[in-house]
Image (cartoon, rainbow, N blue to C red; front, side, top):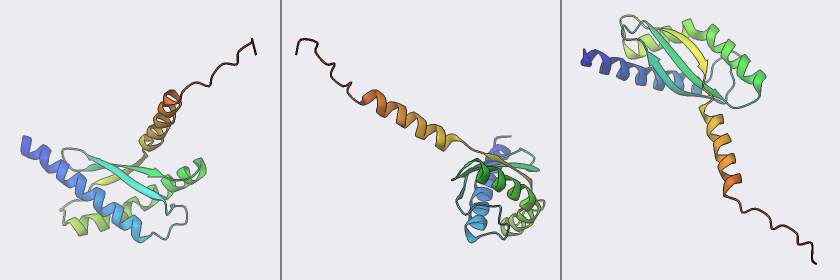
Amino acid sequence: MKEQHRRSERVAEAIREEVATLLAEGVRDPRVSRLVTVTSVEVTRDLRHATVYVSVLGDDKARTDTLAGLADLGGHLRGRVGRALQLRSAPTFAFKYDDSIQRAARIDALLAQVREPAPPKPDGDA
């Protein structure tokens, strides 16, 4: 059973690399932002379904447009990934937004505020 789990992890990492490469080469769909990053991939144990987590640099419209474009490209990417990785049956893709980068930036900003020394209070005697 452990071998099966390790295999799904290896396939997930290979899918992440392949999808990232395909997106870096550029896709023809104008909705897909050039500033999209594949952060991780989760694959079911039977390798039939893969959830691809992406981060998109830009506003909310860029994010929703990119996710819609990726959803429409899912079948095309499935075929290319299946051929590239020589899979008997390539998994179906579901794309989800990964907000971990934004959360990390928010935490860094909050920590920076906490670390800054408080400004001195003005004395009423002066």
